[in-house]
Length: 137
Image (cartoon, rainbow, N blue to C red; front, side):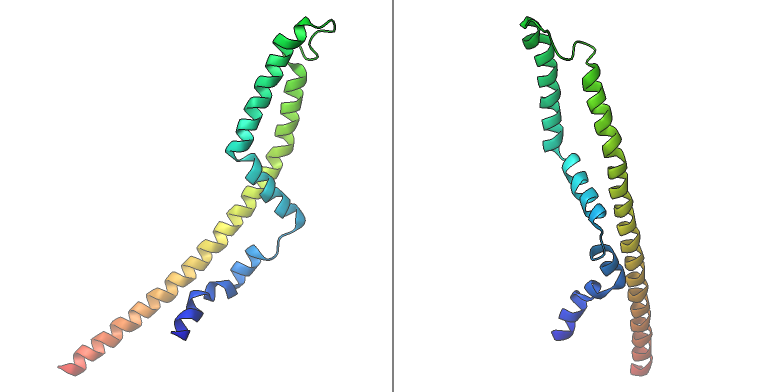
C-alpha cells in the first residue's frame, strides 16, 4: 500500500512539473491572471454593456444637452479606446499562450517518458509470462 502511494505522487517530484509550476515570474503570473479575466464570459458581457452604454449615451442622452455628445457618431474616441485595449491585450494573451504551449510540451514529454516506461514493463511481464508458460509445460 505504501509503495502505491509513492507512485501516485511521483510526478510531483519530476523536474518538468517543478519547472512549470514553481518557477514563474511576476510578469508570467500577471499575464496568466489577465488572460483568465479577459477570456471570460464576464469580461465579454461587461464589454458589451459598456459599448451599448457608450453608444446610447452619445446618441440619445447627450444630444439634448447644449454641449452635445462628447463622442459623436463615428465614435472616434471609442475606437481609440478599443484599439488601445486590443494593443495592450494581444501581447499579454500571446505570452500566456506561449507559457501554456510550454506547459503542454513538457507534459507531453513527461507522458512520453511514462508511456515508454509502461511499455518496457509490459515487455518484461510478457517475457516473464513466456518463461512461466515454458517452465510449466
